[in-house]
Amino acid sequence: MRLLNFYLKNSGLSYNVRMKQNAKFNILLVDNEIAVVKAFQRQLENAGYAVKAFDSGQDAIEAAKLEHFDIAYIDLVMPGLNGVEICRKIKELSPKTEVILISGYPDDIIVKGVGDFIKAGGRDKILRKPLLNNELLEITKELILEIIGKRRD
Image (cartoon, helix red, strand yellow):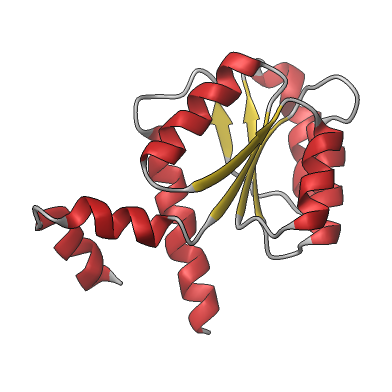
C-alpha cells in the first residue's frame, strides 16, 4: 500500500486511481448542522469516498442497518439521539466501523460525553469544529490505512 501511495503522490495519472481506491470505503457523516454536513460530504466525495450524510441520528442508524460503513463521523451534541447513543447503535450493527467524534463545544461541556463515547465503542480521537484545511481528509486517510492493515491480518 505504501508503494501505491508513493506512486499516487508522484504520478500525473494518480487522481483516477486514487478515486477508484477511495470509493471502496463507505463513510457516514452525522451532524445536525446542515452546512457542516454538506461541507464535509463535499470534501470527502471530491477525494473519491462514498459518503452518506445525515442531520438526524435516527436516519443514520437506519442507513447503518442497510449497509456497512467503514468510518462514521458523529457530532456529539444533537437533538434527539446524541452522538454517544448513535455510536452505541452503529457499533452494535457494525462492530468494525471506526467511529470518530465531532464537536464544536468547549472542553468543559464535552468532557463527560467523550468518556461515554469511548465506552460506547468510539475512538479516542476528536475532530474539533471548525476543522483545519485538510484535517478531515488526513484523519480519513489514517483510518483507511488502519482498516486496510486490519483486513490483512
